[in-house]
Image (cartoon, rainbow, N blue to C red; front, side, top):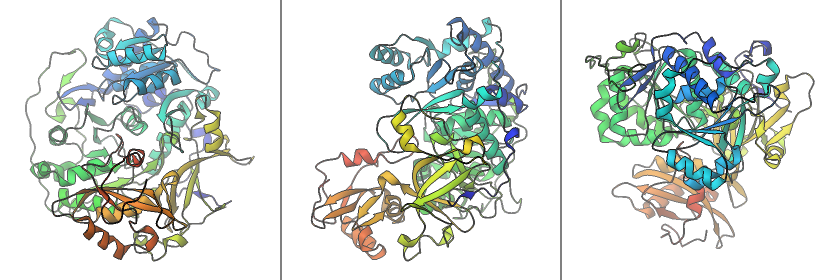
Amino acid sequence: MIIHTSNTPSIRVNDLFCGNIYDFIVSGGHSTSSKASGICATTGESISHAQQHVLARKMASILSETGFGANFDPKAHNGEVLMTLSANSIYSSPVHWAALIRGGTVSPASVSYTVNELAHQVRTVKPKVIVASKAKASLAKKAVQMARLKCVVLELESLVQDANKHPEAEPVKFNKNTAYRRVAYLAMSSGTSGGTFKAVKITHFNITSCIQVCQKSAPNRDTVSQIASAVIPVSHLYGLSKFLIMAPYVGSTTVFHEKFEIREFLDAQKRFQVNSWPIVPPLVVLLTNHPLVKDYTESLRAHLRIVCCGAAPLGEKAARDFLSAVTGSPDGVIQQQQTSRDKSKSRDSGFFSSIRAHVADPAAVGITDAKSDTSSRDQPRLQIIQGWGLTETSPTCTTFDPLDPNLHIKACGKIVANTEIRIRGQGQDYQKAPILIEDYDAHPSKETLPIGEIYVRGPQVTLGYLNDSHADETSFEQCYDPHVPWFHLKWFKTGDVGFIDRKGRIMVVDRTKEMIKSMGKQVAPAEIEDLLLSHELVADAAVIGVSNEKLGTESPRAFVVPKSGFRASDLRSWTDKLLPKHKQLHGGIVIVDKVPKNASGKILRRVLRERRGDLIEGVAASKL
């Protein structure tokens, strides 16, 4: 067995936090701080770290009146379930924490769900309480009726307004054994093989360990001076862990956006001097090409220092085009530093004024430690940092520290502390690749590289899936080794395909379920997509495999969002010169208005496979 380990020394098992997530956040030392924890991008209203904690404990008292948490059993793996259904808000954290304080389990639902999708989640996790925004309360009630389940539906706005009438509840305390197994979150995921959404059991220990190993491995990534924009939904574990747990733990500030609207997003960056954008690849592409961005270049160059990109791979050309658009350099070195600021007087909004403060100047809410330059004063730089993980890994397995000299724009990071990885292909484990990630694109025979499915184990790996033994059996490989910690006794089969280069950096190539078997060889759609996106007349692209009766094999087909002057025949000729025969677009080219993607930026290949009646260009028609 070939096991790849982290370059970062492990945290001793006894030093990994064992307890309630809420107590872990308090242990960060910012629960009494008057500094802004959350700011509403739309209104400028804010809530301090101290106010968030008080509000969470008062909300926990309200939940207790509904009976939530009354039957707390420290030996039970699952607590009573509270489902959330609301857009990103400065009140997202207190709602989650209130449930955790009561010993409950939180199951976040996406505001983009239809009533059928929401009813499926209700049936799966069986919530006792749903906290929904006023705009989504009716949908929640319809889903509960459809699921034929008794459940209390509370409106978030009323919960906030009524909180001051209640005392502060004391958090339920967990011993070590309870924290190891107690489920904090039931997060919905399609699993490693796709299909119907499943509920992933994420424990308190999974979450707190993940935060600790990330901080150990990348101490300069999430810091007290960070001011981050939250457009990634907190119903997604990436957004949830970043904005509702990591940020309050380190004492940073988050600017919450209910939805992505580009002018508001850029205005908020300028107004609050945002220095960190955790975003997904589609937003990188959009920001690169949008004419509004040039109006905000001064503020972006003055303050923005880190773009964290996750949830889906970001191609190198897309990344460098973004850096060029913002900084004037494909390497992110800022060409001209500007320092002007917009300041205006703060005012009280009046709405929920007892716990809110209106923000116009960051200093008005205690943001006095923001730093516009985390590297050299002579050469400030904007960095794109990619990470990799899954819902099932709480969510991080690899990341980069911003000061790592081996950080590379194509790599997904290095293995975080206490985490181990195997690369499995053709029934065997693979060593590191004999190349550097920088040389991957030019490698003459990628088929010879040690690329395989990534297996992972560590304290952040989920217990498994709720009431789905088949998914558990197919997703894990048991390990019987008396010399490893208990959380290393099983390997999670991620379904992601990639390799580790000579410097220990990971590159994720694609998903096992998305690989195309063309002419007897494996083809990664992401590789062809990266090539297509490097063409000057391609705005966006996606690739799937289609049945090719003429060749008797599966062939790649491209779905392309064109720019002015695009011709499919020219693109086909161009790609044929750059790709070996089995990777060429023998399945043809389809012109589309947009590539379907989910909220986290992943291409919805299922939607593309279901298309019928498309005009296939660049080749004779091929059947799906």
